[in-house]
Amino acid sequence: MSSDANETRIGDAVIIRDEDAANPIAVRFEHVRKTYKLFRNDKQRLVATFFPGIHCDTVNASDDLSFTVGRGESLALLGDNGAGKSTALKMITGVCFPTSGTVEVHGRVSALLELSAGFDMKLTGMENIDMRCQLWGLSKEESAVLIPEIVEFSELGRYIDQPMRTYSSGMRARLGFAFASSIRPDILVVDEALSVGDRKFAKKCRERVRGIMDKENVTVLFVTHSTNMAREFCEKGIVIQHGRSVFGGGITDAIEYYEKH
Amino acid sequence: MFSTLRQILGENWHWRHQVWSLAKIDLVRTYRGAALGKIWLFAKPAVYILVFWFALSFGIRSASDVNGKPFLLWLACGVFPWFYMSDIITSGSDIYHRYPYLVNRLKFPLSLISTFYSLSLLIVLGCMMLFTIIVCLMLRIPLGVHLVQLPLVLALMFLFWTAWSMMLSPLSAISKDFANLLKTLSTPFFWVSGILFEIGKWPQWARLVMAFNPVSWSVEAVRDCFVYDRWFWSDPYSFLPFVCVLLMFALLALHNHHRLYMEVPDVI
Image (cartoon, each protein chain N blue to C red):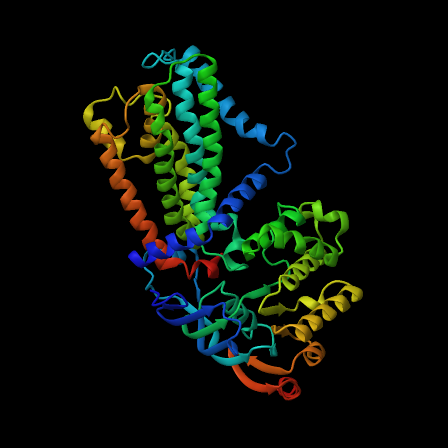
């Protein structure tokens, strides 16, 4: 199944993933297709667990998607709802797998998928942050430095010791953003996250992202409908329609293309 | 098949610190919101044991000493392991729905979810076994040399029930039927597996059939340590069938993991 440590072959798909942050390429997609199975009903779903070859409807969320993101670049993924932006981000993060094609990711990815990404609602904010630091592979000492920073940025105050399920969606998003942007990833993936919270917090988030992009050699991927945000942050843009990348280039050209089509 | 095994073992080794802390987090999570917290760990099995003891000794009048050891000890050695197994059978068989965010929000190897859940239940079982030993010592109930095999028994149980969870969870993730089936089977498992009756007195063929039941093997093996004073491998007619079942489940777990681990994030 895997030929060496970094390369995994699954059927027709190849996934190359390592933590080499010196590689000039951060992310590369080559003819990537992601097919989701659609079951007509629960009976078909049950049968399909025993006979994987059984026929069922499929939909291609990504279809022949190709693009490359260089190290340190900032790329906006523009596209309408259902164009396959989030699927592409999930494949970059590594939580879902392509059906065919090649996905190449060099460096550690921190992602904010759908805002409250990866929090356990039964645990407190503090326990969640602690757990996430461990899953990210930080030592106790590193976490001890980072955690107060995250708590302060999230502005949760005393709520940090309350169970996550009592949080409002804005509070979850704030904590999610504070974590994802504090752990110093090589690749930061932001999925509509900066549009949450009040104006003051949104501004703070934008400043944080800007700081990350200026100072460090971080690659940033933005998913957004907001062309203003894309223009503000990104140098490059690609337009995705029906799972394909139909345009790639400078951000101004990409926005122009997106708005026309 | 071997590459899947190597992959799973490699992941478990690489993430061992995280597995350990996630097991502790699972315990915190289970007993969150209760001021008495850890007391509930003991309260539930203790109430069960007392109720069964009451029913069996006053109701059915079949609560005599076993192998010179008190009936309550014999009962505890069945009920404590049962709590471990019943949690695996009900929650452990559908573990990806318990931790959906580890499946499709964070990059985290799927195989570890079964491991740390099973480990967290094993910690509880370990505490209960320790509790049993302490009570035995306090009441001067003689415990033999056969108690030293207890860690090995617990390790084998851990291996088997983790494989069980890994085999069934991908199926439960795709179709709810599996999760429902196993929840339904939990109570029958309890009643047919010799937790409340001695299968040692059964005819040879019936014992052989029971030996293929992993619940019954686990309970008997724990009782071998505390009550029957014998080595659990000394009876090949019960140990070899268990080894066969263990190997079969391990192979099926590898097979299902390999076949379905890419699909699970799409359906959770």
